[in-house]
Length: 181
Ligand SMILES: Cc1cc2nc3c(=O)[nH]c(=O)nc-3n(C[C@H](O)[C@H](O)[C@H](O)COP(=O)(O)O)c2cc1C
Image (cartoon, rainbow, N blue to C red):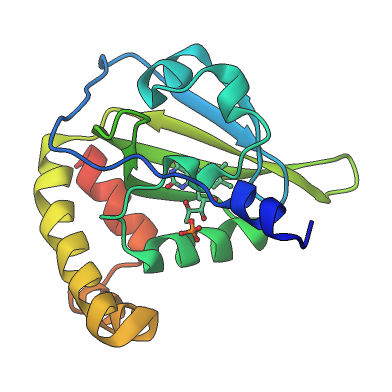
């Protein structure tokens, strides 16, 4: 709708982030699925619970409903580039709950294919992140975000690539090693 009222309605109110961290148990797996555009089509009870939303509030919404402003944009750019091209990716993500609290996850995001190998949606399985992983990732994401504020996503991409190059690994492998190493 192009009228004023329609535009007003479309304006989404974002939760205001606060310093409260949410945790979940070691064995819990937080699952959500999306269509090809990133619209949430499924959320399991663990994911619903930590998100602070009801299942009805989540389904049909773009997945950036759980986006935390501390996440660097470059990570999502990389994520979409991988999954759109049929590959899976591991990533550390900090998410924003409805009440403004936050929670860190170690996510494995994969495309889902139909019988003809066409991508029909995506699937994210989140586990508790390792302490070692978070200790490295938090300052790295902060650095990336600072570069984004100054020079945009091009700048954070350059910085990320040079850090990974110096370590001799790709992002996915770097993350996998942090979680499991
Ligand atoms: C299966 C799947 C799960 C996703 N899970 C999350 C998530 O938990 N948190 C998040 O911020 N983005 C998630 N995303 C990425 C979002 O679609 C989006 O790219 C991201 O929130 C950045 O949004 P923005 O470009 O509007 O800033 C997921 C995407 C897919 C396909």
